[in-house]
Image 1: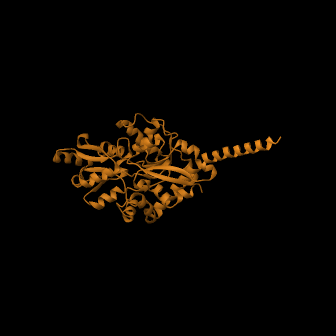
Image 2 (image 1 turned 30 degrees about the vertical axis):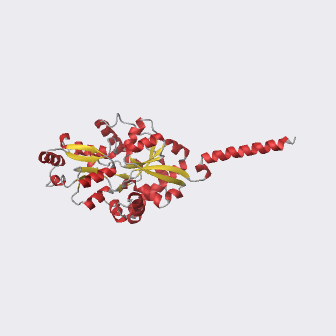
Image 3 (image 1 turned 120 degrees about the horizontal axis):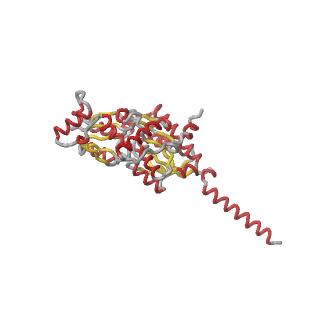
Length: 345
């Protein structure tokens, strides 16, 4: 009979241990901060996430974020597939490719639209004067220089690459013999443009403000809306397994992004501080970032519903140029319920 209390004590301890392990497995249920690994590209389009973190709103939402920087969306997809990041903050275009590889990623918020613009370097810029059509300007450059204009952008399948091709072939009606697309990383694009190693580039903020500040001869030739109307830009995508395990954390993430988007519009001076801390790296300053936040290439929105139709159009164009095998249904890609809940008054 004396064994019974011992057995009861043992079973109670075992139950407590098992329960403790269960709570450890679900930090969200326990109320502990939820670790979240966020992949970002270093552009102003990702500013809402930088602001949300810098203002402490991610922490208030119960998140413990760590950040990894990538040079392009396609590179980040590899990290998402390998399970090394939980949240993707980059262009929408690579997510279509991800879904063809059975990678469950869900767009829970947008951050910006019409980010990509086209700039011409000092040698190419004069050809766009005097009201010449964009296609004719590139043709004239090739005729005089004896070579195609070298235009830098990010890898095939990315939003910058897709947008540049759409502008060249569909909008400017350029001859493919007149433009050579050179794929490289974001930093390399900026450096190549400033060094004169390329003649033009599709870039985003803060690169636009930085390169024009360093060399005023670099000219803005096409805005994002001209390159691809309602161009879908940077989004917040969450890995499906993370979203299923931590629904409240995802809700908090989206609320923080919505709040940050509102601050970017109402008080860019305040918002510039955390953005500069994330992007500056000693290369630029708060004043430059603030200018970038209010430039024609910066249009912030957190509503994922605003880019669904434009995403379908971009996918169709990707199919036409061979960077996507076929149209991918957007059902399941966009999950606007988090945004709708975050903005419900």
